[in-house]
Amino acid sequence: MREGSRSIRRILFVCMGNICRSPAAEGVFQSMIADAGVEGELTCDSAGTIDYHRGQPADARMRTAALKRGYELQSKARQVTPEDLETFDLVLTMDEDNRRDVLTLDPEGKWSEKIRSFCDFVPSPESHEVPDPYYGGNDGFDRVLDLLEQGCRQLLVHCRSSI
Image (cartoon, rainbow, N blue to C red; front, top):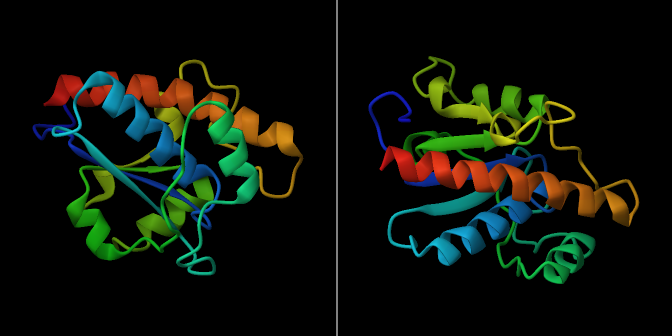
């Protein structure tokens, strides 16, 4: 299944601060790309809709939860830019607020078709958003990782079928 007539090779994951959900999605997807042996075909990155955490690593609680599952989160927080909308083939937002914020970077709607919800790839999602675990307990980070693993598996299938 193709996104229109273009292949999907570059994916950007977006959350608010780029310290919990999106860097975890990046780490999970990078691991799945490596396990599938398609590192040269698919790449991913992550960004946030705010600039507050620029240059910081992922939240320590998310890094700990991810490491328990074998994912090492190495990215540094950055803010999503209008150029990202041109560079990436698919921009996946973690919640509706993130999606609205990213869409404001594309006032003419030139790239709107590639800005989608991450949960579009989660089979039978309980909600239409990946919840922000920042203010909750440690179990929230595990729940986010559960959703990210489910969605990234489906995303990998989707991307590979578009190449």
